[in-house]
Length: 113
Length: 113
Image (tube, each protein chain N blue to C red):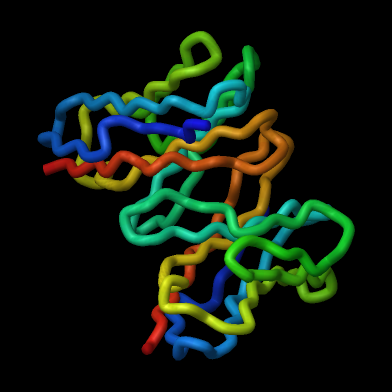
């Protein structure tokens, strides 16, 4: 069965520092992968997605992610974190042909001033 | 244009009561999903509707949960005889065709006392 693992439940970084959030997936074929962000009390907002093609994908708010098939990973990166990036981040993979998403457990990002 | 809307935003009910949660998808989106977000279980898929096809109910946790989608638009998730473990945020999402990006609503926070 498909699954997504986000090994880090909580990460704290200083404002201006670089960020990498890890995501590992289990899927038999080429996966469709997503990163979503959820601010407190808000719904989920799509940051970026990977369907095929270039393995380095650019998203909104200065985020990017790299698909590495050999490592079954889709890590999210940002070169310089802003205080407004503090939120919970979810990695997800599409399961089957219905488009339903299987989510990781989420990583809570705290940004220190 | 308008995004996915959900109502109510908050619902407090007593154990054993029935509740109905409503989702209005983005106009023209044929696919509609319900997810549940709880502290213990993270984000879980519940049910998926696509056009006039039979819904994928594989994520519904028990027969107390049901959902319908009228006229290919608005959807209602019904929980009968609510239990305390049903307390969670229920998220609705829609997509243009079930294969692409899902747009999420703000969710309904359900508290069962």
